[in-house]
Length: 292
Image 1 (cartoon, rainbow, N blue to C red):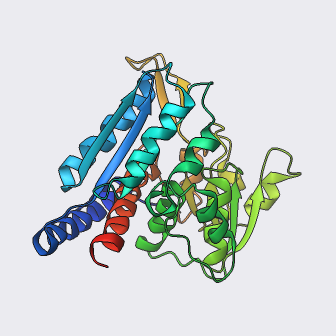
Image 2: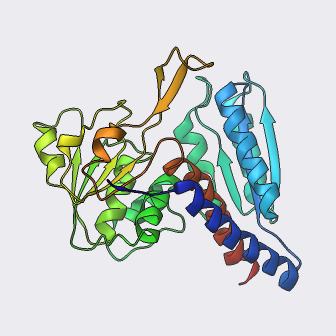
Image 3: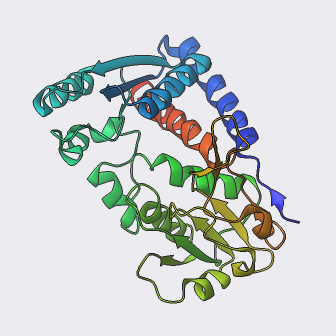
């Protein structure tokens, strides 16, 4: 049976490390990191995510700046708020919760965030530097960064390994493939137009599953001993649950865990790491400003 990579426990360790550094900053400089979270509208899932991030900030001593805007707000007003946060020296990270309402261009708003406060790591300049050899972005996207951190803290070497990324989204698939490449893996991306995905995945030493397809990857697709990081979070019907559904990943956990060397569960794998990496990015942004 595979070793279960406990993302919740690893994220908890990282949070403790961040809290210690925040306390040291406060003691030495009288300042703490500041994270601004901008949310537009009243989507329940977005509100839930934002509340979780704000709570995490409070627990670690990071100052939280809350910007809650109505659903009907104009794009110009959102951009104005972002510019105000760019100019605020107490804000070291800016997060705009996606998706935004239809009248607002996500690309426009995200591009307006200062690259020095782009803790989501999605600014074109940060992604561009990630894609270039010998260049280092100021911030890495949180979920891909969390995937690599899970591998590193589990003692799984990436260099020289064959890695397959399943999915090519801007949020996970593409940046995690670039990160693996920077770590000297041989990387293949499998997507909806790929031919014979199963045989490609079967050759991988490391698999990052980020396709958004519930239980897509079966146990007999896995090379014995491979490390499998499951980014998928999919709701499937389950009449035995009070909610009527349960969360599953992109892999068939039961089948895969009998073949793989390491595997992440859903929930409790990559999810907690995403928030931990957001907080780490905010700390790093603050250190660059406060300690310069």
